[in-house]
Image: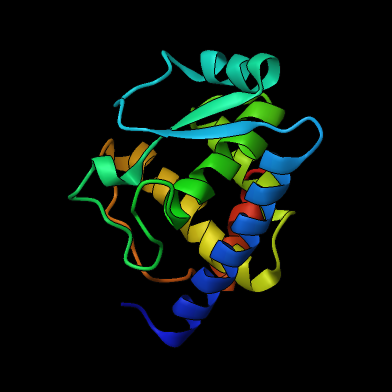
Length: 163
């Protein structure tokens, strides 16, 4: 289930994501985050962005839908920690930034979202966003979720590489 650093980093990421989730969903101009078992609630990034910006709602495919891809350190029940984290990512990264799901869009979403987290939580965030998307774009396959944190030097090199 990961080492002590990974467990601490993911616990911090969950706590901070939950704080952001509460702020997003309870603000005066709140955005409603709904969890769905629909495999593809949007035809693409533009539809998701429009839903967030115009309708103030986003549908997140629940992690519980994919029983074979459970996260080892984030709850995967409907509306659980992993779903809330992904909802925050969609709102902050895609909806508010207005970027797509391509390589550049996901990189920009990661860089934007990490400004909302502490140094420890950013270690887990880099694994969740940057590492998983890098794996997917390199191999074309969905990665298995990992209970690890990336080396700070690798994360910093990634920040410099596309800046």
